[in-house]
Each structure stands twice: as C-alpha cells, then as structure tokens.
Length: 475
Picture 1 (cartoon, one colour):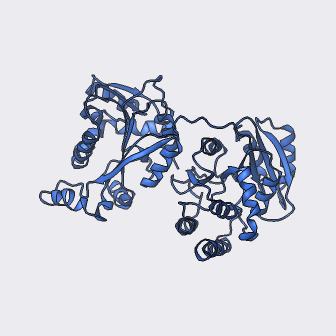
Picture 2 (cartoon, helix red, strand yellow; picture 1 turned 45 degrees about the vertical axis):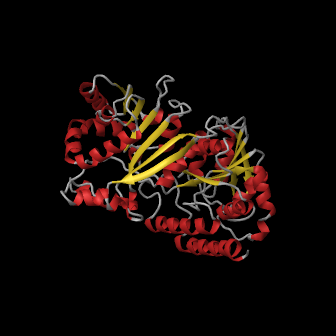
Picture 3 (tube, helix red, strand yellow; picture 1 turned 90 degrees about the horizontal axis):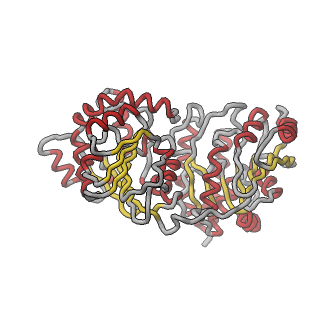
C-alpha cells in the first residue's frame, strides 16, 4: 500500500545525493526522454514540472518561466543549487497550491507511478491550468514491470518506495474524471541500453513497427482541459447505503468518517441476521454519535448483500444512491470523488475499481485478484463498456436511474446475490455511461471476510452466463 508523506519524503531525501549517478548510469533512457519532451514542449514557455527531482529535465526545456515542485526538501535544495535561474518549491503534488499562477505546460515525467493518489494530483492540476494549457505525462509501460522489478532487486535500477503500474486507459480515465481530454499519445525506446548498432536498429526501426511499438518502454500522453472542464457540480442530495452483517466494530468508524456530500446526506445502515450485536451497535451509534449526515437504520428481512442493497435503495430519499461496504476496505473518505463524478456529469454509473493502486497486504487474496481481473475482461466484452472490477462494492448512480433499472429487473431475474450485477446489467441495458474510479483498497480492521471464494466464483460464472445470453445472444 502507498506509504505516508513522511515515508516518501524520507526516502527521496535519502537518494537525492545519488540522483545524478543514476541518471548518468541510465543516460540512454533519460536522453531519449529529454529529446521527446523537447519535441513536445517548445522553449520559451511557462512550464511547471511536478516531481522535478534535481531539476535537470526542467532546465533542459529552456522555459521562459520554470517552476519545479517536489516532495523532497533535499531534492529541492540540490535543484536550487544546480539551476538558480529556475524556481523550485517543496510541495506535495497531490496538494498543489501556487497561489493561482497558471502555466502553458504542466509536466509529469515518470511521476504518476510514484504518486499515492493520482486522482488527487489530477484534481490539484485544475488550479494551475488555463484554457490552452497542455499537460504532458511520460510514464513506464506496465508490460516492463517484471523486468524492472528484477533490475531493482539486483541493484541495477534506482530503488523505488512505491510503484503503481498504470495503463494508458487508466491514466486517460483519471484525467477525464477531472475534466481533461487526451489529445495525443505515443511511445518509444524499445532498447534502453546504449549498445552500438543494436540500439539504433531497435529504437529507430523496430520500435515504430505496428504491434512491436506496444512493447516500448517509454510512453507519453498529452492532455488539455476538456469541453466540460469548468462545469459546476449539481447540488444533489445523497443516500449512502451500508449493508452491515456482522460488522459491529465498523459501525462507528463508518459514521465518523463518512462526509456530507451535496446539500444533504443520509447514512442508511441495513442489517439482518447478524450474530455479533451489529444491530444493537447501529441503534446505539445513531443515538449518540455526532455526524454531518442524517443517520438511519433499516432492518433487512431477506438475506444476502444484494437484498440488503435493494432494501436500502427502496428506503433512500436522496437524489444520488451510494453503496459503502461496511468492512471499510474502500474508505469513506473517497466517496466525495464518486459524488463529484456523477454531479459533474462525468458518468451515470460510477463504479469503484480496486485493481489499479497497490493494495494493502491481505486486502485481497491472490486467487480472488486473478479471478476479478478475468471476470473484468469478460464482462467488459459482454457489456461493451470497460469494467475492470465488477465486484467492488462502491457503486453510485442517480435514484431516478435506479428506478428505471428496477422496472427492468425481471429481464435478468432476481438471482444476483451481490447487488453489483443488478446495477451493471441494468445500466448497460439503459445505455448509461459507466466510469470507474480507482480506490485504495485496505485490509479489514474488524471481522472476517464474508466472501466464499469458490461458491461466489460459481455465482460469478453464472452471472456471466446470464449477461452473455441477454447481451450477446438475444439480438
């Protein structure tokens, strides 16, 4: 899982003195990257670089106004010494604040994989761009992950505290959620070693071939503020439904940590058949826990999470319906970004995705992870929309759309035990736009998982069969 700011600062402070050594050792990569950036960014512009390190890349671009931002005080001090004509600030890219100053270009060179929260960083970019700003991102092809991790373990590559491996689609999605649109993408550098004869053949010949270019190490993306960049979120009231069975220890943390969204938020706990006193804890917490939300309890008469979700939705009064799993493996603090995606019109069914950021140990077992990825590919094909994680419990949609889905539930039957496919299938049939928000998936702090790997796997396979029948075979 992503480390704290203090851990990251200490790590980069510790490697600041060796940064030049690593850049020289891997000069073939950095030379190619600099040549690419000079082609994308003209000299004489106002350039902001996030994660600037010791400032060499920013200086090579010859900006009229150059500002570098880095989390590490030691990196910033070296940058100021090496490039005194440029401005460098110690700052977290995820909490960027430059007093309203805007730039022609914002550069993130090999930074996205080392950020704890890429959504937050892209959200912060909104404060430093204007209509014609270009955001230039370079990043490492995730197909190289095994080889680069081996090189790091052998001491052949600069150590890294954190590395999230993003695909192009992941980055484009996170940009779009924050109002940016992609205008160009590309890749280069098939062989990052300066081997005479072979390197030019690979990097100037083979690297450009169809198919082969997908193996290139260095990838890039150029984005700009999109047509709906400045849209204001609609003031929508919210109902957060929390299915809670045997989750007594998570009830009060859920209340304390769930923020108010929109003009009003209600937090609805749905409980049935608990054996650990969850219902009693819910009622006690509603009576004595302070909260910015209206707190409610709804008893569940049926069984299963899917039934609990439908029970909560039937009782909800908000314009927007949100699901928060009571295990809090998806943190309540992330709910506002789901609300914003819907209220700003970025999507109509907002689905959480646990398969992008690194996960805490024990958050998801290996076989569950593999199965989730496989089912994500299969359901994306069947539903004709990209869904990486079908079973993330956090899903958000308008209540008016849910009522339309409910009217068509008979088409898919009442056999969904999870509650996820009821929404996914219904949204796909109605032509709702589905988008995913990567979430930082945490290990449980209380209780045990209620997932039964093989039984639920068979149920997933059955739901996939239902989807194939309805969406591919019945034309």
